[in-house]
Amino acid sequence: MPSITSLTINDGLATPVGRVFVPNAKYPVVVWEYNNGGFPSSFPRITVQGTKNPKTGLFRGRQTIAVPKVDASGLILSVSRINIEVIHAANSDAAQRADTRAYAFNSQAMPSFAQAFYRDMEGWF
Image (tube, rainbow, N blue to C red; front, side):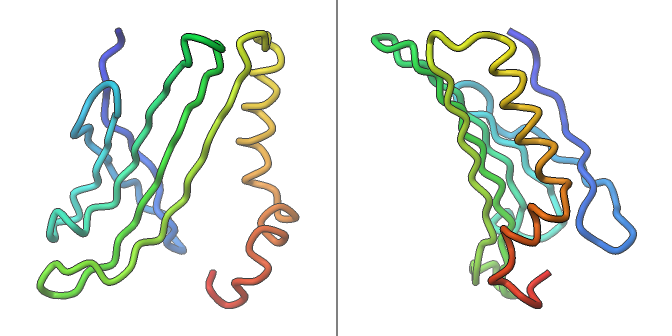
């Protein structure tokens, strides 16, 4: 099994800054945290889990990205979260899985996708 390494991901600032997410938990649920120097409750987290149903062969991969906002005492005020779920049937082939992955990743960078997805959040971004 491969080792879990840190992730460096750019933030959403006007001039992006690379943030290092360090693994905090390993298989079967992998958790990376960005230690922002505050309370542990304020750490942005990326969680990934993959499961395979032994009866049907159906694979499910789940990823959650959570960015909390806390007050001065560390109390969580709100959490912005993205949940991603990938589902592959047992009889899916490598090309089908590769296309699905490419479409998902590439759609995120398309202005039309962002406009349709976030249209009801005018002024939030």
